[in-house]
Structure formats: C-alpha cells, structure tokens
Image (tube, rainbow, N blue to C red):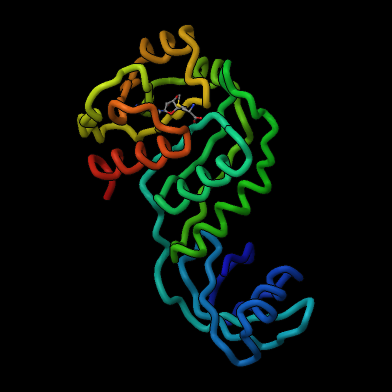
Length: 232
Ligand code: SAM
C-alpha cells in the first residue's frame, strides 16, 4: 500500500478514507493483520493494522522488509493521446521502471487536456501492483519547443521515429549520461520537429521496427529496447 507518510519503526500511519475503504472493504483486512507499505522514499515496511474503521484506520510500522530500490534514471517523454491510451502509457512506464514521466505537447498533439493528478494516481497503482518501492513523478505537460530550448545535452534522447522504417535500432549502449525516451502523438512529429530533434546534440533517432506502432505500443517497445541494452 502506498502512503505519503514517512516510514520508520514505531511510526503511526493514519489512513485516508479511500485507503481504509480499499484495505478493509475491498481487501477484507482487519485489526491485527499485517500490510506491506511504501512511500517511494523509505523502502518497504511491514505494518500492523491497529484500528480498522469504515472511513478511517491506523497502522503501526513494525520493521523494514526491503530497502529503497530506485529505478535507473530514465525519463519517458510522450505526447498525450486518448485518455485510456494515455493512462496505459503511464501505467506501463511505472511498471517498467521509468523514473519520471513527462507529457509533451507537440505540433500534432490532439489531446492537450492532461489531468496530472489522475495520471499520478495511475503511477501509484502500477507501482503498488508490481511490488516496487518507487513511484515515478508525473510532471506537468510541457511544450516540445520549450523542452528542446532547455535541452542541455546532459541526457541522451532516444527519439522514436517511425519514418526511419527498418529493423529495430540497436542502442549503442552509451551509459555516460542518463537517457530519455521520446514518443510522438498519433499523427507523428511534424517535419520541423523531426529536423530539430534529429539535429539535437545527444539525440539518438531510433526505429522500433518496420511497422508503424500505436503510440502506446511504441512506448512499451521503446522501454523494452532501452532495458535490454542499458537497463539493470
Ligand atoms: N496513428 C497511430 C496511432 O494511432 O497511435 C500511430 C502513431 S505513431 C505515428 C506514434 C509515435 O510512436 C511516433 O511518433 C513514434 O514516436 C512512435 N513510433 C511508432 N512506430 C514506430 C516505429 N516503427 N519506429 C519508431 N517509432 C515509432
């Protein structure tokens, strides 16, 4: 269970209404039961339920079960698409160990209304389900132009471009700087954007194979490609 509270021996954790509902109503846990907790900073902790009410509850931290394990420093930058598919991208990025997820508004982005709080909640759920101790931050949407204006080359950019049709690229395995993956919108990148991206220092234009993938599929494929070459 994800909680915002600091975790430490003897720490008392008050539960919010939705957490109490989930734990006692949905998961049928009760007083005296043990629960695994994480807050994204202090590793995994075992806690005991000391009060179990319908709308509230209290846990007491017993001991640390696992140390904090942070994923590699990998950002996923993606142009938001339809709501459910955007949810999917965030969920899969959190499962696959992105450290930061950034919605990027490009020229052909047609879903500019992004609810960051909702996406952050999806990232928390995904981290809960895969037993991680880390939750990636979902950043506020940023315009691609502004992002590139500020790009200082301290991070490699794996720029996924379907116009580079052909066999999936092999990443060259450069570990001197952290990486960011960039996935375009349903309509792809504009010619101007593509030129600007390809000319960027530290950009690695990448093919994900000879077929045009949906943006959500491309995000998963790109993260897998990165993991196989550079992940731990
Ligand atoms: N119209 C489809 C859709 O509804 O999602 C296809 C979208 S595709 C243009 C979206 C993005 O996925 C592209 O901008 C690119 O970043 C990535 N992508 C898709 N297929 C790819 C491929 N074969 N190689 C590299 N990137 C790819």
